[in-house]
Image (cartoon, rainbow over all chains, first blue to last red; front, side, top):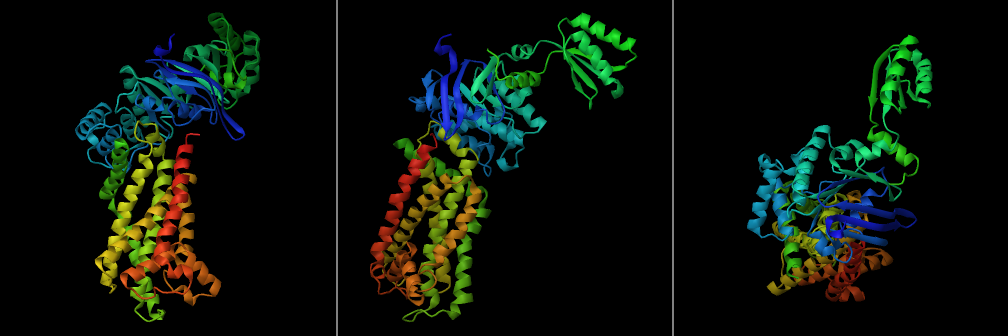
Length: 318
Length: 260
């Protein structure tokens, strides 16, 4: 893939603050028109990576190219082609949504008429048209974040950086923001988003890069990452918790691995190799042992399990 | 260069729009010095004797004007640290606007705010019997000195706002601003203090401005025998220029270092 088809390219980025190393050889390639989720625990280096890519921070070493431009040497041009939505809504609370967008429009060097026109378009596009003259301080969290997104879209940037876009939002607010991001992607914007929420990465991102201790330790589609931890799993929920040891013994023998047992939910979980034969064997042996199951299911592993597996083992070659 | 000016003005207009939509906080902050004038002018004023005679309120007002300018340090610091903590500064830095506009716009907005505060204080002074007895030119020079002082402490405020981790630090500066205001010729003549303390008060950057104002306005209590008291007009320019020479480059460097 040539660099023109890549919206974001980072190679060997390093950044340290005193004794701590925030980024330690960070590599990433995001094709144009896709959504990449940068997933990692607190302090993994997600925000540092985004700040470097958005020209806010100089890397100590390495190269970063955004929209075909070097983020250090061509920072000014990069800024015309990116949008950044940080962890806090960077809008002025005392002003209305329209006033905020007009203000940002002027700072993007639109003239007064163009800024007003663009503000109107964006209010419409992000479902903010009915907020009227209301001060942003009275908005819900989701509404405020949508306004923040709209403000970053004034110049219709090629690349949008979203740093934990739904942190602190209620489920409804998250859904609103997800819908707004999806419509941006449908319009052709490349999105790089950081998140601690696996379901967010799962729902929004076509590809996920798992970052831990300043470097990308796994990269792929959500399905690829899930399959890294050994394919499907069987979940059995028992009616009676007293039968857990016996049932765990049966399932462990069939799956040939010590299963995970959660006494609180009376759930036994184990990876399976052959789906149907394992399911049949588990069901018949449980009923032969007179153990009643409330629920039996075969499922793909969750991204949570994949994440814990990948970060827990310190990295899986991509 | 053109964009630096236009962008600074846009940033300043953000504050103007906020004041228009939400006037409460700004009105309270502008009226607070009036409260202090009334408190000292009427509550404590009766017990004060001005060396060489003259009414205490005439003596007090120049000190109050200068103190209002010094208080501006908190306004600036609060605005700068709030923008930084809320990610507004980062957002601006990620945009293709002139990098200098963020701080330049802040200084425009705060100077306008202080000019309004000064106008209110002058009105308040006139109401309680203070007068500018000098020529119109002298009065303009006096106002110029006040705005120069404000411009200087503005950059102290910008620097502090960029250095601290959040707006909660403003409270600490608020506490420190008080002794700086009092340990000066603002409320009492330094002659009445113990010798060493009086010397400290006379060399306080606030005092030359206050003394110069008393001279220019023809208000009582201007004099003093020390070198700094005899050169108050000179020092009322030197001090703010020194403060600027230190804090303007520091602030610019600090702002640039946000990217390090």
